[in-house]
Amino acid sequence: GSKKEGGKPSGHSATVDQRVEVVPGRVYVHPVPQFVDNLAYLVVCLPPPDTRHLPITAVLVDCGDHASALEHAGAVYRRHYEREHPRNENRSQVGIELCAMLCTHRHHDHTAGVRGMVRELTRARAGGESGVAITAGSAGNAAGPDGDDAYASKPGNVVVAGAAIEGVPGCNLFLRDGCFVPLPCASSGGERNDMNEVVSVEAVACPGHTRGSLVYALRDRPAPCVAVDGGGDANGKKAKRWKRPWERPDRPGRHAASSHLFTGDVVFTGGSGVPFEADLERTSDDFLKNPGALRGKHGGSRIRPGAGALSTERCFAEVLVRADGPWRDGSAAASHSDDGGTAPGRGALIYPGHEYTTDCLLRQFHPRNVPPGGEWTRCPPSTFFEVASSYFVAAHRRALPAGQRLLTVPTPMARELVVNPNYRSLRRRADH
Image (cartoon, rainbow, N blue to C red; front, side, top):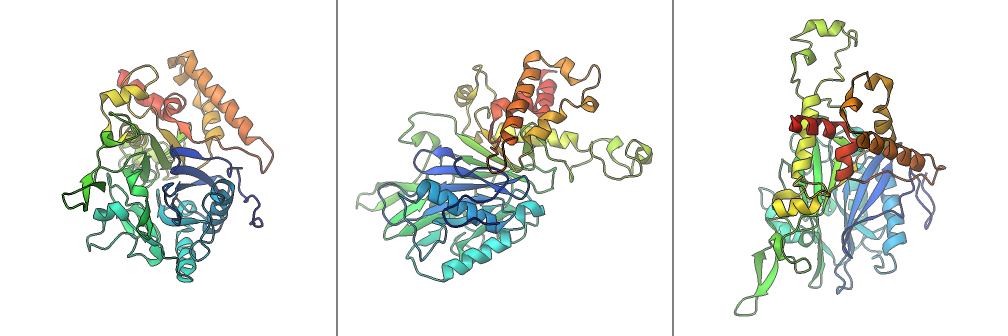
């Protein structure tokens, strides 16, 4: 149940105090516990420090339960932002303007709260006039084919984004691989809080768990297609220019993007989601082509839990090579690598859709998964000890008393390359 005003929200983990900095003083990620082990993520964008009356805007990745998500957003606001950013009672009930939901896939535990959230936000915003407009801001060029603004044209100014082929409930912004999601911009009296000017979110297609599964890559720079305010022309009028990665005034020269990857049920810490809708790459996976497989160890079941392994590895490879975005070059990759190598994405953070870390890590030591001469005999001892150490740390965090349990995520990609068997398998393929 919900806690009283000012109290801590309910949930499977204590997360209100946890936040990850994306852009100092502007953009932060807050994990939101849902159900038994689901995780949503609230990405907030604070208004520029020289503005006075603009709200905090936010995007929510996955929404299994809208009531608990709103409860948690209110607790996050009171804990971190209320003193510097007083709420506008005419506009937002929780002090944070939630403007978009990004759905990684259609499964009920990730989308059941979408329609309820749209109804709640629409009702709340219809009750008063705050003088604040929510639009796509500098991402206005990413409007739909009818030319309407991605936010202003939606009920309650709420965007629900998902894969075009996925059938996400309530979806009103349909994405394909490589799309940059238009982010919200709050404007009032000539001032604006435009999330597009400081970060970008790219959709990375990873079909397998479902045919339309997406990984959302949040990065600390504008999308290549976003125009931001530039200098004036000869008449002193504001002009628009294309923002390039190396034009960030606070970070001169080329640099690797800081990437935050919301992987849904594609990548977990130490494991992966079941590839329910993956292609059947091997004859042994397809009971139509190989009827004898039905008489195997799974009896008469037509579910093939081992099928789709190659699709899973392809998705893992896609996440890795796309982590740094279209701005990656050799010098950027080297800056991410602990050993000075050129592996992409090593500095990225992984935000999975479930708190499954202890289960995924412990499964790697189960006798059924460690036959004589199995994987551990092909790994260096350091890999074994890294996985074992990660398990004991995670188990300790999850064994704390109820109400005090700590999350084990996000996880650095550099660690995931060691502790995740799918990435270890990819490395062995590359080495041979």
